[in-house]
Length: 241
Image (cartoon, rainbow, N blue to C red):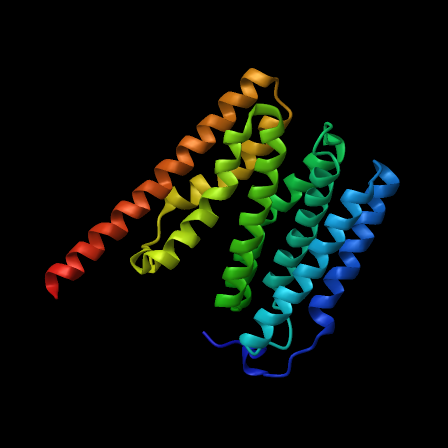
């Protein structure tokens, strides 16, 4: 489906650049509310700059002048994820302020159920929007896995790293890039990762370990199932050829 935003080839730099302003404002609020050191400020500012540059590049490539209503929701999620990232980076050796981290992460995760609905209702579903949503999800999960790994152990990093490892593997094995069929199980497992990591962050250690381990096991099962399906499809294609 081609939307009005996609028909207009004129790129407006101010659209993604507004995200950097929003990111700095959020960092200022966090600094005033719970305190934010040099590491947090630098990480948050770098994140905001990277968000502007990467989104701007993607918009130019997609010949998009503006963000769709759904993209604005995803944009808000990206800014919130930047706040979570700044808090985690600022407290790598000390407990992060959960009073700020949990609400930020929770709202970002909750909005994940909103942007897709907005895209469908406004008829602005696009590859750019889907990719933007996916990358925000992946980075937020990576950040939360770094946070919980400081409590339960470095093995929890596998939750955040798994998607990036899969993408890297696809460069070496092109058959992993084939399109997967829709799966409610895959979507459910992916959606529960962030929820599990947030819940684990407020649980006592034994419960945190259990919740994180269950989340990792479910994610490993989901990726394993997809890899097996892709491998079967590759074998079938080889047989047909």
